Length: 104
Image 1 (tube, rainbow, N blue to C red):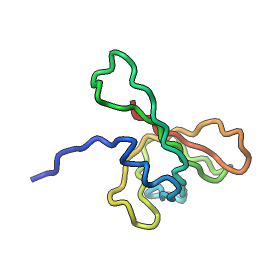
Image 2 (cartoon, helix red, strand yellow):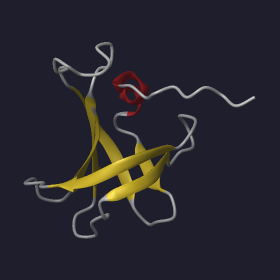
Image 3 (cartoon, rainbow, N blue to C red):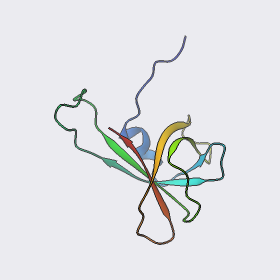
Image 4 (tube, one colour):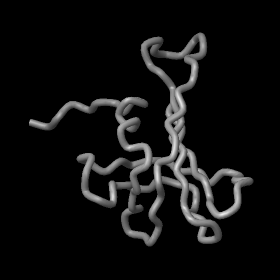
C-alpha cells in the first residue's frame, strides 16, 4: 500500500536551517538559510494552509538554472529528498547566490 501524500509545511523544513543540500545529478550544494512564513491571503483554497518560502544560498557565479530540482541533505540526515522548484533571485550580498522555493 502506498503512503498517503503529506504536503510539506514550514515546520517540515525549519529543523534543517543551516544544513547543506546536494542537488541530485549535479555539482551544486546549497545551504538552507531561511524559512520565511507568509500570511495566508483571503480567498486561498485552504484556510488552514500556511504559505512559506525557503531561501537557499550557494556559491556565486555557477548559478543553478531555474526549475525542478531534487535536493537531499548532504549528510544523509533528514529522511527523504525533496523535489523543489528553485528560482535564482537577485542577491546583493557578495560571495553567494540565493535561491527561493515558494509554497503558496
